[in-house]
Image: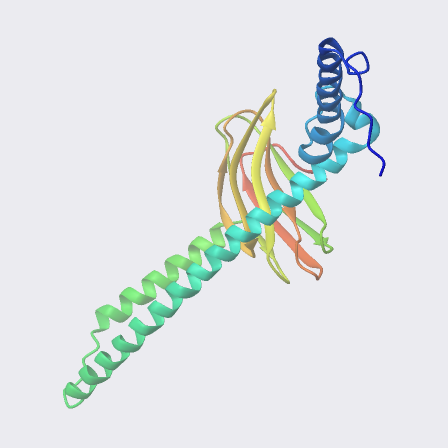
Length: 240
């Protein structure tokens, strides 16, 4: 039977060698962390080596996918909540319909009087709506076909405090959007949305610069984006 020889004290590493080996291992781990792991996993590149090696771009893609996955999860959770609410509303509506049917049966024998004043009022309201729609004339219309995964950015050149009206539609399906602004070294995010097919309102510039929207088609089909704008701005420009 073979027994391993016990090393002598002279053959054992000294305390200084152990400390030096530990220090070298820590430095090596720190270098790998800063130059490889942080850029490739978190898109953090304090030395610039990660971008030179192509690792930072990998990390940016990972972070973007993680952000989109988190946003998708929030969207699905909200969608489930909306479905639950819609079921509750449907149940309430069913009960209301039953009550209305009973009420109709009770007053079926009574004569129904429709005052001419009510008719005139309804006609006036309808006329006002038509006049408002006719008064709203769009100054610019942008139409873009976005393929699956494609994004585009459209900005209005605006002065601080100026206001623009807008209305946009995803003709064939919903879009993700980010309403934001930049200029003079400043930036601002106004509103974000996912899976939205139509939006309209007013955009007031927080500062002088470019203010508008970034749209992305996350569906599997082409989606036609139609953006209409009017109001106080210099021009419309497509950045991307």
